[in-house]
Length: 388
Image 1 (cartoon, rainbow, N blue to C red):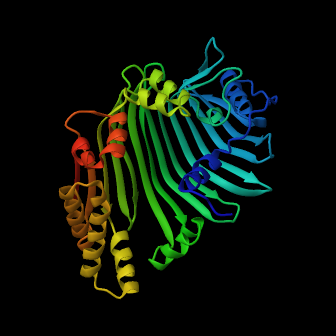
Image 2 (cartoon, helix red, strand yellow):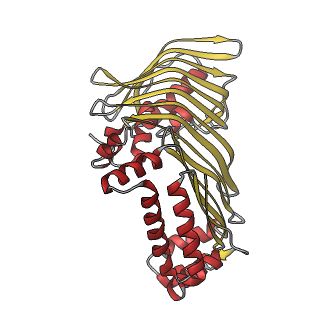
Image 3 (tube, helix red, strand yellow):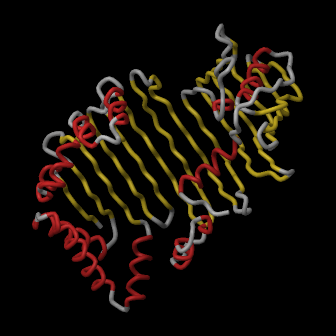
């Protein structure tokens, strides 16, 4: 089996490691500990059957479950957790398990007797597991938390390829959808063989000297339901010997009510444009920092075309300028051509930034695109740069 998209690779390394099944009710084996029973109840609320622990003990305010096992109700995959340490845990009046922290050690999921995925350690701080009737899916293991750190993830695909992740961390800064939500998540050392990409991309990567890729990902942002301010502080994907792609953005007017109205008017163009009058863009930047991919790719293309690198850079840069010239802004087209030529000649960082003098509504952008595209560079404050 080959993954269809990059997101599937991440899912194989993370979601498969905790085996998220369909929710099904089954009676777990009681441990004699109220806290221990609450955790096993959440596992079974998330779709695991026959949850049990070989032993439960108390030590310095911690509840420790050893030899925890269960199986997915849907397909019988075996879940095993070597040890779970619940710090200062208690069950509140809503029958929810609350704890300062929960640590899972040596988690493994097996199918047909073969281990499919493992996780060395999961640490969750400021955690609250839902009570009766809650905890479906991944919440059965993670609950609602303040911070999360996971290390040593390894998953195996149906085809036998290995996907590994050195670490995952997440921090929830705000969590009330009625007010604001925000936080940060980072994935470090996502490693997989290029054969997980579809052809012809896999063969192309191998031809460029890439057999196995190692990627780091970061996403951080905040959204306010009341003001509608949506800010992507950073969205980054960086690859060893590849490069780093970074995006930042800020928009206004995306209130909960506006989002609901936009969703309700998806089939009504006039209504959609009317609602977009309330949404404005304050800034957007996209940058790419080369760490080897551009050099390899340009060298390969130049070799296939039988031209020198400087000639290739000039031709491709000119082509980029000609493509943008269709907007009707000659000065901007020239700036794009020059920046592209500079980057292709000496790959460094190529950046496109939209910094309008004042926030621009989505309706304004759409109108300018249709009526007079030449206005777009000035309207959006577009800048294109290339630095070594």
